[in-house]
Image 1 (cartoon, rainbow, N blue to C red):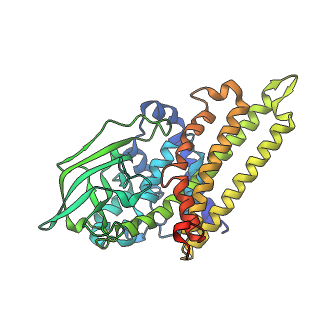
Image 2: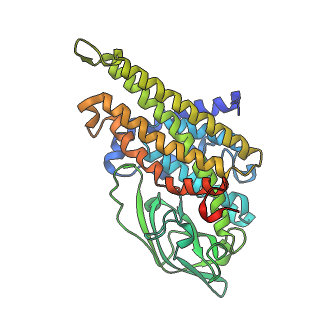
Image 3: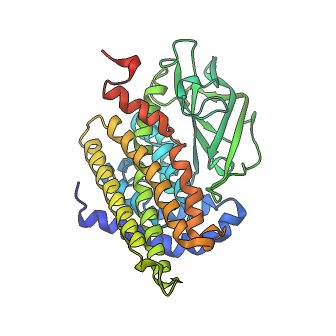
Length: 385
């Protein structure tokens, strides 16, 4: 996959927006534990940045997903992980299934305002006892006349305390786990919905995250996305975009870590010379930059396959695995070269060290990615032919 001038223009627009509207406020938002999603998303919607790969009839640009990856990569220039994650939930995690499988009525009512930045969205999949194991969710949506009655709870939900609606995965029958689930749009202003206090997390501090409780919440059955019982399949497809987004948005943040470390070690003097002049340091930074380029290449390769309609489950899982592990390696190595300064809370490197740790957990843990890869390689003991 090769970027065109249009790809680069999207990146330039995004990076200029970040420089003006996000990075000057990151420290404030990190301390507050939340960023103003409605205000920020509306500004992004006005620039067309929330619907790059979404249909034009609902306010999107109608471009292929490679342009969304260019946008996602540019998000890596934000000086924290929480804000890009909140944006990614809006663009790549909560709305892909709605855009592809939702009715025209549903898309006009919910997708169009999400693209415009008039509504903030959350994805409701994880539960206290069902994170990476999506099939184990307990939340139910039972039919009652023309409605669903929803009961259960969702955990670690990004954007939740500001969201206007949730793309909710719930059990709509007592059938087998992979065919009894459906995706349903649930507005957050309905009776029976309540939220915990914002969760106190190790990293991603500026991203508001909470537990959501559903107590006999009534929603119209017309809020069903696509077909009933197809929710697990739809969510697995949404995961493809989520995992590609996770990798793409990691690339430039890791490059930030390396570049800032180069500048710091060039100026930091130990034993009469700069830290950077030690071969063990400059060789290590060269190795890390090489690994980042390898991640970029794998991300582009998986994206090209996705755009061409290929099943990229294996490559997307590899990309997600590589991004999470490399983020831990790069941030840990760079922090070491900052010495005591790297251990300070407000240092960019220590922030990325904390924020990127989630990459190996959220959206499917490393172990889940390895399980998927081994199945597709036909080397998993339970799945050998």
